[in-house]
Image 1 (tube, rainbow, N blue to C red):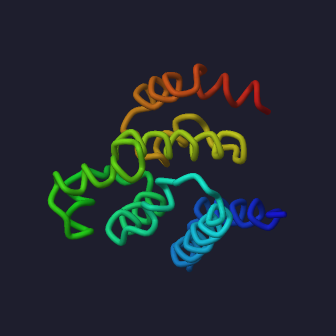
Image 2: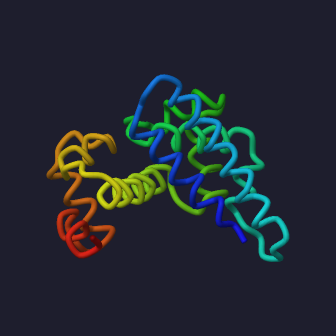
Length: 161
């Protein structure tokens, strides 16, 4: 039913990795398309989906777009709050209420998900993936990855390949 979504996500990943002329614009537009389609898929569901509420909130939706477009960025609550014109406290509270996770927890989970995609879909080394995901050291990346997945990045790549 949504087979084109996988190919769109694949293209999004390819553009992100290529970082060629126009890639940033394509990544931004494809991210918008994916977010809109996810809203459409979930729109008819009866349960309240906090992620949909978050996308409907102008400030949090903008913050999510910033985070998803540049997950490697060393985001702080202060930076994002400033970019969406909220106080630090108001942003942190609204983000957690609507998303169900704190901003740093959400960012970490996103980075781990993207790292998994890079580990399986590219020939990048663990060190290169760590750098692409914004980790200053491969040691902190490996530690965080293992905490969230139960295996090291190398184990993940070897057992999933």
